[in-house]
Length: 290
Ligand code: C5P
Image (cartoon, rainbow, N blue to C red; front, side, top):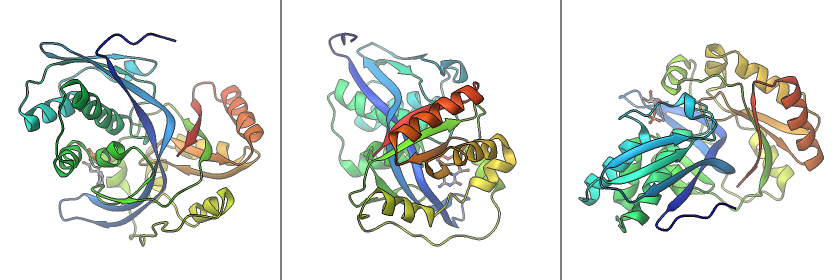
């Protein structure tokens, strides 16, 4: 195991998964009102911060090529916003290990921003009042407050209203991305049709099967729009549904990552093997969702 250098604060930026996502309305400014259940995977990007006299960002990891370092990178925006709010110099060396596909509906950018806030609060020895920290998170992106929470949470409004989720069973999943980026604003723009009713899960399900049953009654209202923009999303869903033992297959966020839920570990492993063999260019990842 790698030894952490002194002063290093390493924070996992876990993949977020929308177990369901209903679009329930639209604000006059064009943002959509959502009702969603966010959970987090046991895999993700890693953010490391080190003392420095200026603000720098390095991106490493298997998906670093998809994310050029630019001043409008969410990670740098998060660091500058926190420094401004706390009235401290924006000075840190940030290293982002990009393990999640970029523009993929599992919150890479949002989770990275939340992780940078957590890491820099520690490095800079700061504490901000919670409402201020969550408002700052929202200013960085609609999903950032939920990612800051980092555990199963009901999300409404455009992402700013967080409701504690009931105690939920852990789910065993396979995450699959066709390695094609999908633009969130384009998906929201493409969506057509009416709005769904909010259907938050308020009660603890009796067991995994009951939980999956609840999720089956809900959907991701952005699926058709994402499939229209990126047809490989339908291919991913079809491939997951065809895996023996897959109890539920859905898209996360605005896509194109989809997840399959498995009740039997052997079925989950067989799904990973099968998809890796059949689709060597896809990103296929086992994950526990909590
Ligand atoms: O907030 P974030 O930068 O993640 O959102 C990207 C884009 O997705 C927004 O500019 C908006 O077009 C769309 N969006 C939306 N409703 C939401 C979240 C995002 O319409 N609740």
